[in-house]
Length: 93
Image 1 (cartoon, rainbow, N blue to C red):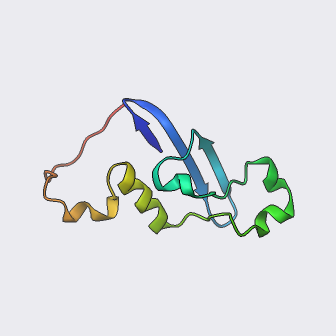
Image 2 (image 1 turned 90 degrees about the vertical axis):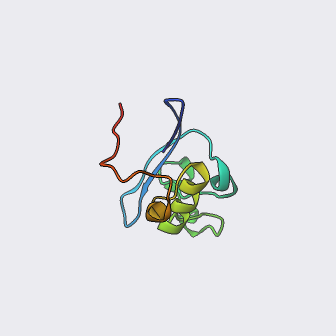
């Protein structure tokens, strides 16, 4: 999920292993715009040949972290950063 100035601009929520796509909102941005992420909610997914397409990209952790880093921060690299104070964190509404 991505938000800019408090407004959600992009959501892609997908659970592998059978649950499928939970939500898609907004236009793909950054490295995601070059992909065709699997979307079990789309009309084409009702047909068996959708799942056999070679141009469908299944998201994995590596892809998610690449997108996160492009948008803001790769959470797997937080311990490497020196510009973040060691605090409990922040919460927002």
